[in-house]
Length: 289
Image 1: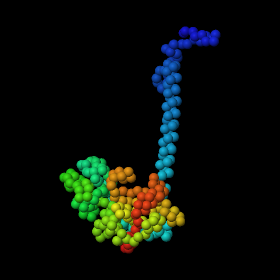
Image 2: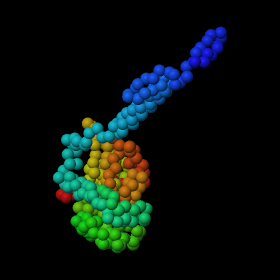
Image 3: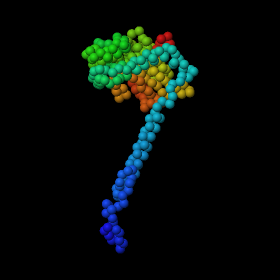
Image 4: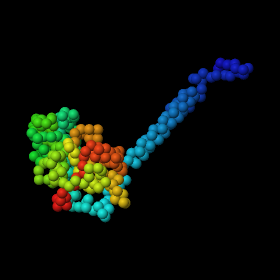
C-alpha cells in the first residue's frame, strides 16, 4: 500500500484489487464495485418511486373524469324513457355499434382519411352517397356487412362521388336522425323541422332524450341526459354521423358526452350549437313512434 501525507497525517490507500471481496446475489464484488452498485440501486429506487407517483396522479385525474353514475330519470321526466324514446335510441345505437373490418383500404369522406384494411371500426362510415347507397335506407345493415366481407363488392371497387368522394355504403347526419326518428323517408337538415316542434333557439335547459339540435348544415341526436335531484341537466350525450375530426378520428357514427364525467363541459353545447344558429327540436307525436 502507498502512503499519502495530508496535514501531517498519513493515510494508506489500498489498491482496488486488494479490497475485500463481497458476495451479493451470487455475484462477487470488489469493495468499490459494491459501493457503485449500491449508489445505482438508490438512484433506480428514486426513479421508480417518482414513476409510481406520476402514474397514480394521472390515474386519479382520469378516474375523476369518468361518469360516477348513469342517468336515472326523476319522476317528472319519465317520458324521457318511454317505450317510443327507447326504441328511437335503440335504432340510433344500432348504427353506432355496428362493427366492421374492411378487407381493403376504403377512401373516406373527401379523402380526409382512409379506412384501413384489417382494422376494425365501430359505427357506419360517414358520407353523402346520393349516387350510391345510404345505409340503412338504400341498403340494409346486412347488405353493408356482406359487402364488407366481399373483396369484389362495390365498397372496394367503387365509391360515391356526386357531392364528394365517400364510401359507396355510408350515412350522413340527417339520414342518421331520420332513421332514429323513424321518419317515412330520408330527410335533410332543411326538412327535419317539418316533423318536429321547436323547443328552443337559445339553450338546452328544456332538452329531453330523443330531441335533436338542428342547424343549416348539420343535425345531431340527444341520446342520453343525466340530471341532478332537482331535474337540472348535469350531463348530456349527443350522437351523430359526421366526418373525421379531432373528436371523431374514425369518421363514423359516434357519441360525445358533455358535462359531468366528460372532457367537454355543457357550456360547449352552447358554443358549438346554439351560438352557431342551431335550434332544439322535439319529434312531433314522439310517443306514438
